[in-house]
Image (cartoon, rainbow, N blue to C red; front, side, top):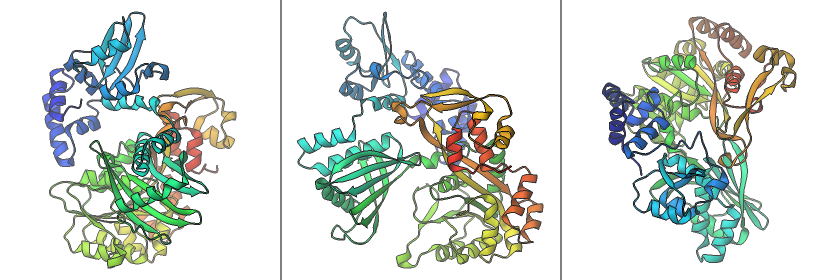
Length: 549
């Protein structure tokens, strides 16, 4: 049972969790940011998800079951049959000699107590409230392997393809996968999910059923089903019980057959703030100051899949107000944002970044977002747009923030133009977060840290340190990681940096000045997240280079 903003805010005020003034401020912020009141209350730190759960529980007159802090074990959850659990949205929260406590999102269900009494005869039943998302997360224990479900579908269904696709997409959502891969291999087709940036096998499909699956995906993506020897791109939408999933689809011919890659476009991206991305307070202050300037250029750098677009949309969320004209040109437009004019690159009509950017400048924009600066022409137009009274946001491929400036100069951008337009360069990488359900601490001696002694001494000292890692559980698929967070490196173009840019400096010269001005490297930002138990040292070393001292 879900509640709307109005009912929840009334509960929060009635139970004295927030004041009416807090709600009024949140309403204003929500209107400006085009988000919900609850989202603004969460962002401001006035409430937490558990606090909202507590308020709803009190409105029902029942206890609140915190399934995050006290997650039931597998044996406990399995005592309620899966069909009953999913139908009633109920999970066994606790049990002892006195009776059992179950958690549900709707304690007022008329038949719930009678249904449970059949399952637990002679037991005293206490019904508590819990958030629906937390209840459904527990249902992962019921999940059987994809192969098992594929076999059952093949045995019982005449139309196999729709059911198999349905199961695969449902599993991908459960694991919060960003991509689904169908890879033909001999007599089987391997299905893999990219979860938190890492590919993992999800299941295998008998080859004889793959053609129907391929054709169905092609039809839904508006591709040609009679074309098997050229690459095709498209998009499809999956709608199941009111939950809509948009996907970008790519089909390419391989020697084993046509391979499919589905990119799942996460709708929650629009709601993310800079704080949600994992950016520090110091970096947040620099970026919020930069995006509030009337003109200039902000660049986000990093490899493909490092979350650059997500960061740009966090900027747009700050800027998106009724009196601001925001225009974007992207390839492709992955996330649609209300109040923003978005243009899709289309090479077939010669609508490329450079040409589209020229047109955008004539549309009287205040803020321009360019999906990527790829060539000299786009770079030149972008710099000129930033120089003539526009705030320009874009991504750029560079290994780190300091490398961005020499690369732009190599693209024949005049040093004096770059120095006068560039405001901030952000470099970022994504690391996997430790699963909160199975996280535990270990004490490690400095000599056992797998890194050069000088580096270990600088960042951890000479005493034993407490580090964290995940044991692996059903909630994280046994990996010990769940979710991702970004590491950031942020170079602000100060007057001293502007003077240096005029001399056409090397990457080393830029980084030397940046360090003198207190810039924190990607590795140093990651070390803080390691110490705070957010990620592991192994994960940090996977994505960020260990400095040489």
